[in-house]
Amino acid sequence: MITVNSVYHDYGGKGNYAVSDISFSVESGKIFGFLGPSGAGKSTVQNIMTGLIPLQRGEVLYDGRSIKALKTKFFNQIGVSFEQPNVYAKLTGYENLKYFAALFSVPTHNPMELLDRVGLRDSAHKKALEYSKGMRQRLTLARALINKPKYLFLDEPTSGLDPSTAASVRELIREQRDGGAAVFLTTHSMALADSLCDTVAFLDNGKIAAMDSPEVLKRHYGKRLVTVVYNEAGNERSESFDMNDRALAEFLLSVNPIKIHSQEATLEEIFLCVTGRELKS
Ligand SMILES: Nc1ncnc2c1ncn2[C@@H]1O[C@H](COP(=O)(O)OP(=O)(O)O)[C@@H](O)[C@H]1O
Ligand SMILES: [Mg+2]
Picture 1 (cartoon, helix red, strand yellow):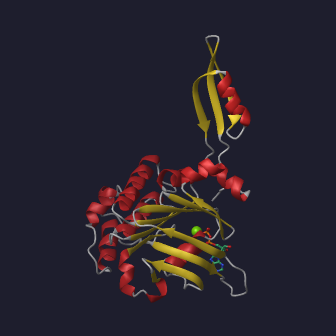
Picture 2 (tube, rainbow, N blue to C red):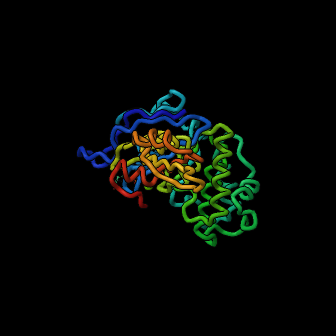
Picture 3 (cartoon, rainbow, N blue to C red):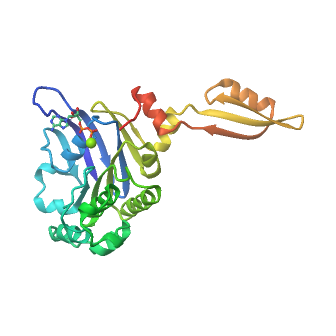
């Protein structure tokens, strides 16, 4: 489990906090989604959690141990994929994975098998500079997985991918979770968050504005429009109510309901409702 406790970060040292009072935990075998528009502070938090930016204030704990006390060897257990592909353009996909695998002192995946999993087997021996943006992104993901990480950090893993590749990447991420990894996913795609995350946190202006499972958020913030379909003299009719409207209960008693269904709000609508802002990249 990764625990983040009341983390603040001030880049300039002048009391302007890029992120403040950030607290959450990412459990093993779960996917935690960090959502927010550009500039919200997502990368700052990821960089603090992965040790790229020194922790200034607050705590980051890996299974209870402070990041400050962790030795270099510990980072063998972490996999990071950045939004900007961090692979060598002049090496082939295969050479890239061979190279990165050699940096770890833990068992690693077979590079070719991993390339196959991200749909790059046929391009394994092409230089990364000849790859399309989506291919480089998949290579970046493969790089993040090469050391079978226990803690996986993914920044916008499916942005710019075609739908079928995006689906296979989602499946690969689910497999990491099912294998027990703690997955920290940064995205501005609500659809991705909704389909993958056990918990999501909405980051706005460097602060967490809301945090819960997509289910609970949708229930809590949703408009909860309830539509009652009923039978009136042999005709099917329908009427909609706010869930909290007392009239709903009275109405249900006064008609012959055939079915009742609710329309939940989407995560996108909830983000707008919580922050007053649209979730754009
Ligand atoms: N190296 C830096 N120096 C100064 N300010 C930075 C630096 N990196 C990010 N910031 C600022 O911190 C805020 C959060 O940025 P970032 O964490 O990159 O957001 P996100 O990843 O959500 O787009 C922004 O206002 C950004 O301008
Ligand atoms: Mg970012």
